Image: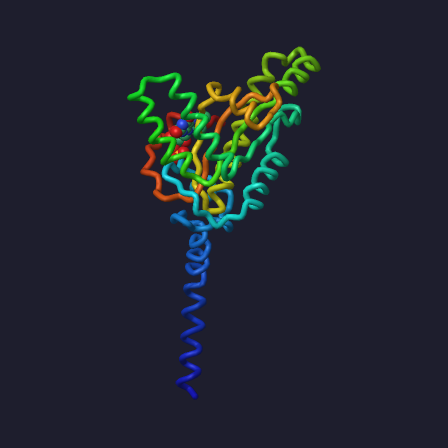
Length: 239
Ligand SMILES: Cc1cc2nc3c(=O)[nH]c(=O)nc-3n(C[C@H](O)[C@H](O)[C@H](O)COP(=O)(O)O)c2cc1C
């Protein structure tokens, strides 16, 4: 009897002693960005640290399309914009539409650059972007921007700049949230070369200006180490 009591006491003491460590490990377990891991339990700071550019991606993902749609809906709902103007428009391309986008990029590039450079670009497009599951296109509705310029002439020259800012905020949020559910994404800029063809293909309004493209998919290779410039040259604090 004494022996069993001693064992239970020892077990409880050990659990108590290591409970903090267990909880830390458990928390990090979800947040560690191993390939294929789901990062659903990450807090904001951890999600911020885990966002990277993923250039080797695949199509075989287990995240339902509804989750991806939900991420875009939440970005559109909660990301701020100047004067609450909500000028950002998002397009989600999946399946054939995603393949069609990257074929279109290659077609446009083939017309613009030498065949040597094109071969290199085409290889990158095939392995890093087209190989993914989908792409998010970030647009700004210039009709909405122009309406703001007319309504607030004092800030007329600021609204196009603020439209870029709000787009960037949407990009960052979508990028981080995609990675939080275990996907890998990168940010690309084949605009304005492709704008007209993309608008025509999906019959998008002529007033939408393409700002960025974000291919995403199953992360197949962890990004390399990133150099961080010294913070003391980039952050100043005064009291
Ligand atoms: C405003 C902006 C524009 C970028 N444009 C491109 C781009 O056109 N093509 C690309 O491959 N990466 C692009 N990137 C990704 C950066 O190269 C990348 O974020 C940076 O090297 C840091 O690496 P990380 O994303 O892994 O943290 C862009 C990033 C930002 C913030």
